[in-house]
Image 1 (cartoon, each protein chain N blue to C red):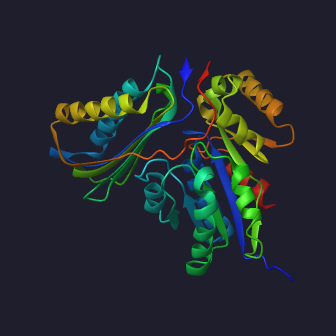
Image 2: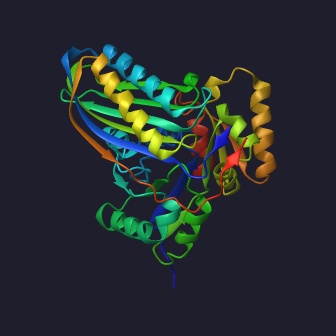
Length: 204
Length: 143
């Protein structure tokens, strides 16, 4: 059977406050304006007031919320249904998933693997790391370690807040110890720095 | 520093009214102050493992997004729109791995009440929702 790819799927993971929503807003802007992609976004907030989805909707994006805890616990039930609903009702070129700050992309990928035949092209997993939080990395904080291990592309974010280049080198070296295969890039999502390079890396 | 194995979560939706219309610049300052007060009660030794997120929409169409994670230097407040506002819907989400949820709920709620009073506002409704479905992760850590 030939499966026709109809939707690309991008996971943007990262710990709380790593800048996922800000990055997704910038990616969406770049992909819509310069690549004419029709986007949909799935957001999973912990806590039953969704903030990220409201922020994204205020920028005119098509957002589907998945509330009620952490996506890596509830994903097996909710994510396939959410993706199918998006496909049927909106048929986007690209779906971006923003899991909660404790979610592990490895579990998301397992669910996606089980969805044979839906025509998804899963793009490299992006994990954001907040450059100012090196202490959490050094402490081997488990959520962060798992997220970094699952990444194909690690984005060291908030570099605008760091003035010492050697500190950023230390961050990169620590990440490299956890995941030696991933591509690593430095960005500032808030300052829109290197967003076009991220898009090139993902969609080349 | 003790880090909990699962996040303590505070989530609320509030209808807020100020006695007079605040300009967008004034609102930016007001929300900056609110985040700092929430940081005070959800952090330990000036460090927050987790985040504070606030999003607000006013009747006149302006919106404000305020975030903080890690330390005070990471506070950002972004506004969208130029209209002043007196009636606002505010969504607040505080997640911390540093203090127990029961304590977080009380401290954050008290901090919000005091903040509103100090800024001559009235809370028209306060919807508190707690969600914690993330039970099965590692044990308590220290670093």
